Amino acid sequence: MCHRQYHKLTLWDCGGQLSAQSLWSYHYPNTSLLVWVINIHDRSRLDSNLQLLSQTLLNPLLFQIPVLIILYNSSFHKYQQNNSDEDSNQSELTNLEVAFRFLATLSTSRASSFKWQVINVSTDEQNRTEDLKKVRQSFRELMDL
Image 1: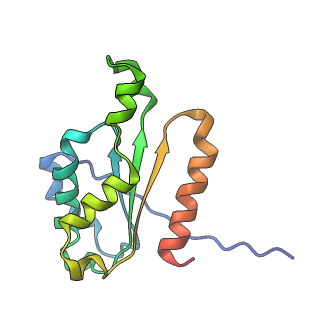
Image 2: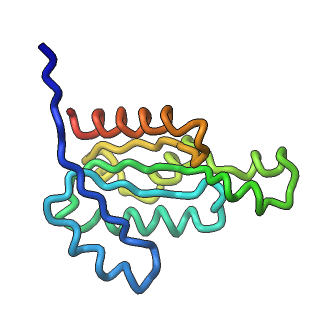
Image 3: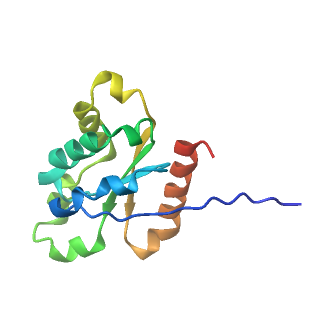
């Protein structure tokens, strides 16, 4: 006999525009996991992006809420890229770099008060199954499922 356990998942895409940020807190009650998405090609905004995440986590409703930072590699970006592939790969953000820079935005005591992970996914169709498995595994680990 196989028993499957299901979990209800509600996702909110709150958008990063300044005008929308004041509305984010309406979604905080009953939050079980915060997913923060960063484009691996957006190096110029990484520090401000992670600073905003750190500030968001100061809200008491998000105390000890696990955080999953997803770095995504859009296949659309490849078509817009004017540089060579080698230059493009060197400018991509890595999980380790984002993790270190995220830790730098947190106080020492705050960094150990919640679970968090950084994973990378692509929007390419051929990697979709593996990427979904990564996200699912991260959800399980962060939420102790």
